[in-house]
Amino acid sequence: MSSAGIFWCVASFLSGSVPYSVIVGYLAGAGDIRTQGDGNPGATNVGRALGRRWFIIAMQLDGFKGAIPIWWA
Image (cartoon, rainbow, N blue to C red):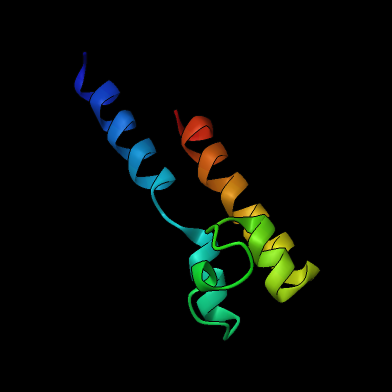
């Protein structure tokens, strides 16, 4: 595998490992979102615990973390 291929694999892994829903929970002032709702650190749980506005933000960030490495590659 070329060095560019290795770089994109590592960059994609790092991008996908960022828990944006947990970060959104902290930014919204709710603390750790995994302790609320169903305990799942996902956008749906953010929506249940914090409302539609925060759900949309968390869902967009989760979508971007998958789309941006593909777009860059």
